[in-house]
Amino acid sequence: MKQLTKAEEEIMQILWQLEEANVASIIDSMPEPKPAYNTVSTIVRILESKKFVDHKKVGKGYNYFALVDRETYSNQSMNKLMDNYFNGSFKSMVSFFMKKNDLDTKELEAILKEINKKDS
Image (cartoon, rainbow, N blue to C red):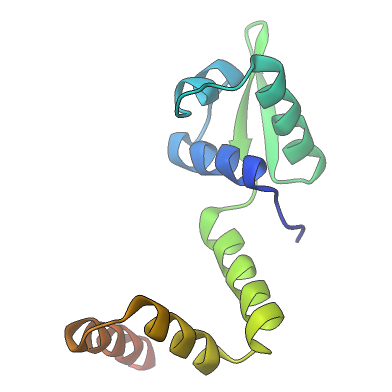
């Protein structure tokens, strides 16, 4: 699966939230300053060429929807992050984020509970 640019990810986040939208609706969901219509339209077409998005005709326009779900993309992105920056070591990645985010005992216990749920 290809990596997305920051702008492409922003559009995908909106499509995952809205589930289906035309370009105008995507722009409406974006923060100020709003990008130009042609800019968003171009990014959506790039996402289509990367097979992340497809469209269906609605009246004279098109509604776009995600072909790749958020969880699949998130998993792929995290695996790539882990491979590229932590030599594929989940332990090293978690240790890094624990140190950088100065987690307290309650947060660590909550993480351990989530891990234990997965093992059950």
